[in-house]
Every structure is written in C-alpha cells, then in structure tokens.
Image (tube, rainbow, N blue to C red):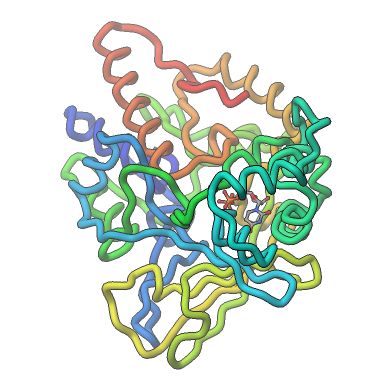
Length: 377
Ligand code: UDP
C-alpha cells in the first residue's frame, strides 16, 4: 500500500485479514493522510491538522466498519455564516431566509418568495452561477456563495460547474444540520487513533517517512497506490490542478466563536472560514482553544493537494492519464488523489473495501486486477 490514509489502511486491513502480507508506506511522518488528528500540547484540544473532517454516511456497512475501530460520538455539523455584518445559519434554510429578508415566512410562503426572485429563464443550469441564480436568486447568491466561491476556487462561479453547488441543499424548514445523512459522528479519540487500530494487524508492516516510487513496484505482488495519479508518471505530460489550503493557526483562552465552523461569505474577508477545533469534540472540556483560519490558493509543486479542480483543462489531462493507467498491470490507483476526485471519507472507505474485495476475487479466479476499479472521468 503506497499511502497510509483511509484507502491504504482499509484495503490493507482487508488483505491482511485474508492472509496476505501487507506493507504500508507513507512519505509523511504520520498515518491517516489528510484526516490526521493530533492533540495540541498546550490546550489538550484534538486538532484536525489538515482542516475539519466530519464523518457522515448513509452506508450502513461503512458506519459499522468505522465503529469497529473507534467509538463514534454523536456530532451534528451546524455551520454558521457571517456576511453583510450579520450571522446566519447554513445551509440556507427557513431561518436563514427569514433572517436575511426580515420576514416571518412559513415553508410554502418562503418557497414562493424565493421562486419569485429566482431566474426561471435558466432551465438547465450548467454553471455554479446559473445553479445559484435559478435556485436561490441573486441576493442570497451574492451574500453567501459568490465571494466564498471566488476565494475557495480562485475563479468566478460562472466558470465552475453546477455540480459544486449541488452539494449544498436549500431547505424550506428549520433543519440546520449541514448533512442529511443517516449516520453522523466524530471518532472519540480522533481519526488517527482509528486508522492506527485499522493498521494494527500482524499481517501489516508500516513504514512512515518512506517515499514510494514506481520503480519499487517490482518488489511487491501488487501495489495499491493512493498518491496523486499524475505523480505516478512524474507529471510528465502535465500537472493535474488542485487547490491547497493555508491554515493560520491561533489559540485563545475560552470560547472564540461559539461554534465549530464560521464561514465568511464576503470577498473582502480574505479567508473562507474559521474553525474552532474544540467544538468538534463537544464531549471534551478545554479552557484553551485552537482555531484555524483557512485560506485557499492554487496548489504548487511542494504544497499539499486538497481539492481536485476538475475543470475543462484538468479533465482533458485526466483523460490522458486515465488511458495510460488503464493499460497498467500490477498497480491499482485508489482514493482522492489516486483517482483525482473530491471524495468524502465514507466514499473513500466504501471504495477501499470494494477494491480489496475485487482484488481477492480476482486472485482466486486467476483474473488480473484492474488499475482503476472506478473510472475517475
Ligand atoms: N459554498 C459557498 N459558501 C458557503 C459554503 C459553501 O459558496 O458558505 C460553496 C463553495 O463553492 C463550496 C461548495 O459550495 O466549494 C460546496 O460546499 P461544501 O460545504 O460541500 O464545501 P467543501 O466540503 O467542499 O469544503
């Protein structure tokens, strides 16, 4: 397994349980990839080192899986947004609408009110902006989405696909849970403790601070690679675009913002959001507090890739890498970086389980394991 994040750990565990000897290597000094959590020595707060990760899923098998390795504590993601000098609740719900427009509308009234502002001439929204104008109208779009999205993606919402906004619901009731999934929670001791238990199996040997390169592949029966797809080929035909995040970390005595996530909708505020990590573990009590202000920018060669951009240019390059990958044998590309897709943690785990099962089935049937178990295009 090249990569000790969720993909490598989950697939590695399944193969080890099936009797394979599994080597897991990671270039970083820690396991768990970007969901790595670490206790702050000064405050005792469990910090989501690479930004907040909230576990939510409708997949019962994945939920049972994570609970096998860590106790999950109840957690609801309730996000707030500051814009135009006021604080609102997200995702846009009846409370947001009533507060923003100074109204006391009931659900059907609010639906009609928003529909009256929406641009109904847009019948098939293609871009982020069209999707927003069609479903929430210009006022809410300007206040909550336009500036935030410019900061997050570094380009105008009319250059982004509608699919990005489709991740967010608009609700005509007071439900303010960011995710509508059946199962949600936070690992009591953090994701790194969970991944450590997944990797804790006699069939698994773990090597941190160990960079994997393609020419080492011959040493192993099969390589599961969860590093960047273009990195496997030394980016020889170009680099797939990512956004990276810079975190401005600061500490505080007491409660800085009263909630875990505060988004800033306006472009004039240079960061997208501030996260206060102790609120991700509401069952713990800490006087001190650790906060991150998040700044998004284009990912350079030495930066940590976060969000795959997947716009037209990247799609064409991705196609070229995918065609090459499909011709490979002895390696399977997995996870967010290996398949260049924005993946939530539950989907990452689901795909890693499926990938390991497919490998075991292929081996026993004498078939070749595909390099890409899912098509990234
Ligand atoms: N978004 C926004 N304003 C917000 C929150 C989200 O404009 O306050 C947009 C932004 O473009 C973001 C997208 O909606 O990338 C999806 O939001 P989500 O919360 O899923 O962001 P992610 O989990 O990708 O950080």
